[in-house]
Amino acid sequence: MSPIPPVKWLFNRRRFLQLSLFASTLGLSLACSENQVQSSPQKVLVIGAGIAGLAAARELQGQGFQVTVLEGRDRIGGRIHTSRTLGFPVDLGASWIHGITGNPITTLAQEWQIPILPTDFDNIILYNSQGNPISDRDLEVSYAVYEQIRDQAASLAENSEQDLSIASALQQVLAAQTLTPQQSQLIEWAFNSEFVTEFGADLESLSSWYVDEGEEFDGEDYLFPQGYDKIITGLANNLEIQLQQKVTEIRYTDSGVSVTTERETFTADAAIVTLPLGVLKSGSIKFSPELPENKQAAINRLTMGVLNKVILKFSEQFWPEDYQNLDYLHEKPPDFSEFLNLAFYTQKPALMALTGGSFARQIEQLSEGEIRSRLMGVLRRSYGDRIPEPESMIVTRWSQDPFTFGSYSHIAVGGESGDRDILAEPIGDRLFFAGEATSSDYPATVHGAYLSGIREAKRVINP
Image (cartoon, rainbow, N blue to C red; front, side, top):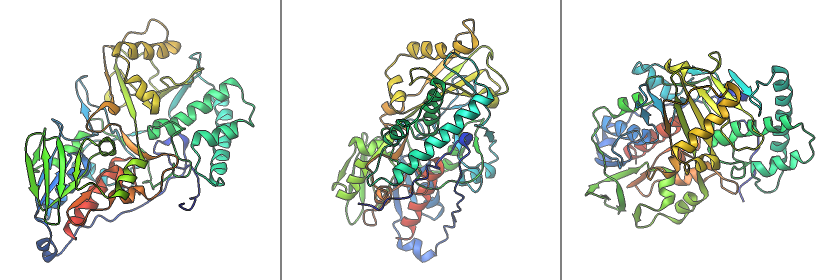
């Protein structure tokens, strides 16, 4: 069994809980000698036009390789998807640069002069289950109790001889607590915000040992008021990208690779596979020969989380203008509990509800009318029955998307710390793997996916 890592539960990309961040730097020098390039494969297929695939293709093409990107969708970007159907840009997948300082996505935004704006997750109004604002005093007291419970659960998990789910560790701690109903609801909300929405997974799934895996860039979180796809467009410039080329089979030998799509077959010296973990887990793509046993086992153990969004556009803003975040406690969770005030970034009367884990999967089974009714029921607790119905609405359903089957990866209880590295291992000098699930330093992030693409391009350049 792997040695038990220290459990600190410090992982937090969103600033509300103000936990410590890990500062890290990563040199991006990709210099190589002319001889190295000449001895490397010259023709490379990149499977997937998400940010990992585009980063890899851009780097390889800059080093003189002949690169073709195969994308199954009718658009580029993968899990970065900006919609403008509401009359303003809204990101349905990735939204934020998580940690502005030293982040390579920040560098790209600055280089291409793409506007970014900070999100202050501490700028929040929290409503109780009756829809009334919680006082600063009550929030302070309850939050202190939450911190104590969270730290006790982390300590219990660290000293356990076996990996516990966060839910299991939490239940053991809560059994010895006497809490008011509101404190219980607040603790439920805080764990949901800190972990379930953050990782797209229930507390029952998340590993206590590995929930704080990886590192983080320092600084605040920023989003793109004009859309994250500005980054995608910049990376894709001058690349050969073939859309609607859904891959069905990847064959590899000592001499090269062939990739079959629903339309045709492509051959090359090497291929970089940037398929999301959910697609790899689905078995929808055949590998010939089959993937090595340890790689397939790592795919099986890693888990795909789900973060879904519901965007509501109104005719007028009826909620407070001074807060970036509007959150709710519930007597009977799960329910919609986190709202981002999009008016801060778009100057449009719009809200974005964030949901994670099994609740995010559940709402995918509801009609838009049912989702709207449930959301408006929550909002009417605070703002009254006379608030207008939304003019328009967008609902994401990432777990049903056949090109992702989820949002991003995490290590579930019972998983192994080295699974991401195993997933990232190339097969010979022909088949390479990138994507956020292959990043042990920055999993489940855009910058992790981007850096993994650069990493694999370097492996192709320097076999």
